[in-house]
Amino acid sequence: MTAVIKTTPARRSFGEWLFRARELSLVLLILIVIAVTTIAQPTFLFNDGGLRDLLRTPAMLIVVAIGEAIVILTRNIDLSVGSILGLTTYFVGNLMHTAPGIPVLVDVLLGVVFAAVLGLVNGLLVAFLNVPSLVITLGTLYAYRGIAVLWIGGNFVRPEWVPDGFQGFGKDGVLGIPWLLIVAAAVMVFFGWFLAGRRTGRELYAIGSNPDAAVLYGLRTRRLTFITFIISGALAGVGGIIYLSIFATGDSKVGTGYEFQAIAAAVIGGVAIVGGSGRIWGVALGAFFLATLGSALPVLNVPSLWQQAIVGLLIVAAITLDRVFFLVRQRRARKAVMV
Image 1: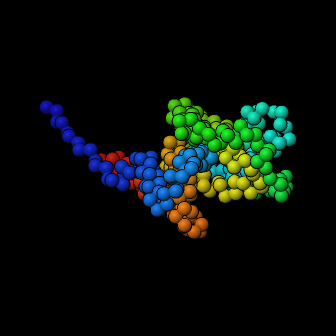
Image 2: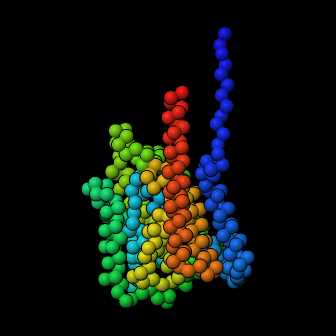
């Protein structure tokens, strides 16, 4: 006679459920921030262009944060994205001014290629010289910013340099949805599909989860790491082009400190800072949340110093939450093995 052993599935705590449903919690937080700010200052949402600005402003951070997240998945980090963004903004704006006969689409593509080359430099140094990404990208952060200061100096992109059609693209949309948000959504869908549905995407997770095992398994870790930095640079360039389409200006300070916003969006969105886990959808929501919070806090008259402190606390909370649930899962795995 065969004995049948019935097992009762372990009940998930509310905290674990919230962790698994991080995207839902971010949606709720975004709605809460919008509701509280609108109640305090109705003009935040109900003014000319209020909703449009609320929807298009996060587009730049979403795109840059996705590139940053792809690098973080492999246990690396890219601190140069803000400098790349700023350089690309001026590069494209200056190109529109000095070569007005070139189609705008070509200007945009050249800007993306320019940014990708800057990311390629990071990738070469990190992947093939085995230098820690934190050291390399900290160096290129200042190197690229120094190039911007030497090249741009006291000059800046003027609105009359930027074609009206390109500026209109940054302001207009379809069915009330800004074109810039549609661009960011397209980037999100593509890279979300790439990471979840393609073998190369899954290999990036494998590298971040266990780099040594990935090498033993035969994964081309150096080549894949190299590619992630090119992607990060290219998407930072797209962020710079989005900036240009919104503000139609740009100087040597554009993008300063933006790398920390991108890292924060990725971490808050659920990407483990130690690599190997995270979803692009969560990163996009994390970026949308931070951008919305950044727009709401000044309206609520919160001092800039406190705004930075709030973002810092959110990063610490997200990392702590990830670590706590990692330890919980590890402990349960050990118990399961012992049983």
